[in-house]
Length: 214
Image (tube, rainbow, N blue to C red; front, side, top):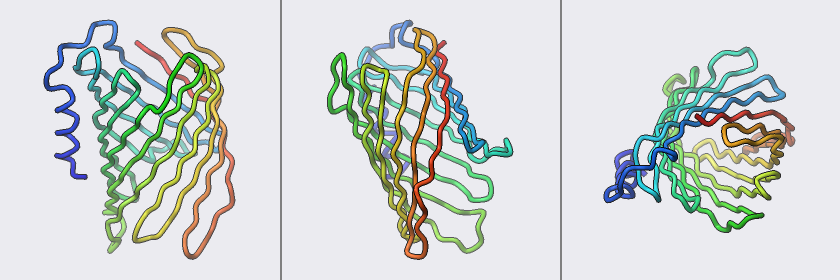
């Protein structure tokens, strides 16, 4: 999917809406620290919308275990009151190149106790920092589940063509603290990948994520 098509999808959902009520126009910031020494920060700022859809500017930065920038992203996200969403992001990765990604999620079930969503994404990889490396695509998807906004689990898988690589991840989340203005979560999971030449083992990772709403 091209960048222009994705932007048209975002704009079409908002074309006939009225402005978002003031109480819905909240900035959200988050910071994550992982057991392998990596970390990340993200910001989401509502721009416009109506009582059903909100269009936001999004940005994020990831850091390696030496506290150096490993990726920086910026884009747009469209969130629906029923839990559905679309996003378009551009990412710059030092030493690799650029990525253009489109992602979507659909809420499959929601009540006071359970929340289940399906997600899918497509990424165009352009390894401009690697001589003679071809562009390639990554396609993936997964499921996210939450119980009473307290305990969650996720599964995801992705396939990259050209290099013929498969990535898998499974994780869990436990909310340690939640208030109207902030949230603290404990995250734990495993991930692995395989190629025609090598298969990794399941690598564990744990971390904490703090989110603040303004």
